[in-house]
Image (cartoon, rainbow, N blue to C red; front, side, top):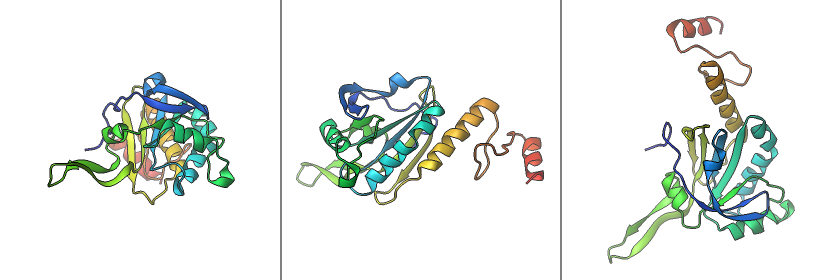
Amino acid sequence: MGLVGKKAPEFNAGAVINGGEIVEKFSLEQYKGKKVVLFFYPLDFTFVCPTELLAFQEKLAEFEARNTVVVGCSVDSEHTHWAWLNTEKKNGGIQGVKYPLIADLSKSVAMNYGVLAGEYDWDNEGDWKFSGAPVAYRATFLIDEEGIVQHESINNLGLGRNVDETLRLVDALTHLQEHGEVCPANWNKGDTAMNATHDGVADYLSKH
């Protein structure tokens, strides 16, 4: 069952902020009044993951201009995050990334958001085991100013996400909030939206 329309699960976890500062207790509660893009990725020091994290950093100013915070999360420790953040890009690192990275070593955050690529269970001998991949899928959540999930998407491990699409969704949510108009297929900021009424939809379709 998805989280759209529901309160985003709360958590307190270790994290690295500002590109190198380790904090013991990090939560999304501090961002009330802002939109939050919370994205999960499998592991530090891998292949597709740095391309995604660097892509979010490249667009960070655009998210911030939209009153939106970007937060990353994986099952690595805060110390592994710190090491990756201090590794140069040419060596597979993500030096220069400034948004927070949550350390979900217990996998509890990923489990609460429903994005862990496996599950804990008992085997036939009664022993506790993990089936599947003990990492998070490539999941993205757009959370509004009140802490309600407005969008979620989950990619399998080998499928990188589109950061521009995440920006487009932030714009669409903002347009809906400010104008009360719904956004049709392939809508981009500046495009015509439509009123969610029969007449409003008919008027929109007559112009397209």
